[in-house]
Image (tube, rainbow over all chains, first blue to last red; front, side):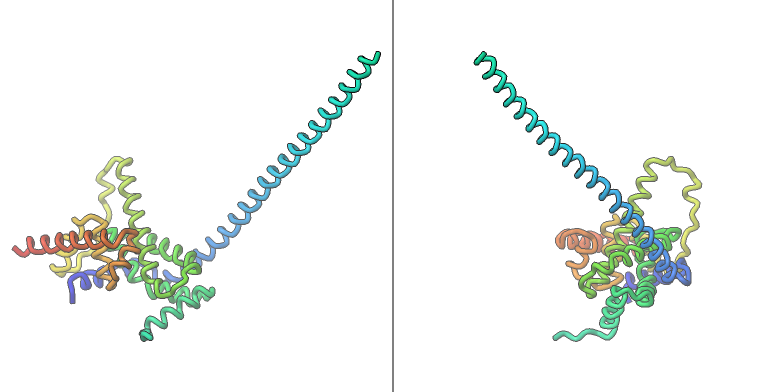
Length: 91
Length: 183
């Protein structure tokens, strides 16, 4: 047998003694617990992202509506000013 | 068509059952590889006080990533890649920690792992200890399994040519060290 293989077998035998007898079961239980925690974290992240998207959406709608109203107002005032100018000239 | 050995076929079936969510299959999969992974991690980091924690992290990563593994034949290389990354990260963290924490005698007071009593094994261990980690990992991986150069490159996240040259240097180093000790 090659020395590398012998060395590895020795290392494996020793390392095995450092693991708990129910190591596999423990890892599995921890993984399930972590998955539950990760699920909550994912849900919280989704709620946060939805909240941010709602705020961005509301602000965008507000900006678009304000811009439209301003444009309408400017147009109405321009028409009124023109009418006043024509009226003043006729007097 | 190439024949699949019963062991390999069994492993593929076990992996598929674990991917389908069977806890029993997952537990058997961990139990099947835990000794090899523990031996590999122990050889790579050279200390026995972190074996269980690192193995724990490795298998947690395995469980969370297993559903994304498309080809069960690639499982072993994939698992050893996780093990190698976790062990290397631990070595890097330790090196970083040493840079910021002043060294004190109490930091050396870790019980040394028992020696094998076989002079050839101890000679090999001493030679490995003086080797750069990126060469040492290749020697250890090849002692674990007959990986191809391509698989070694994938596990160690490097190119095939880099693997070949590192392996050549590592073997030269080992040959030299063993020859020096025999003189």
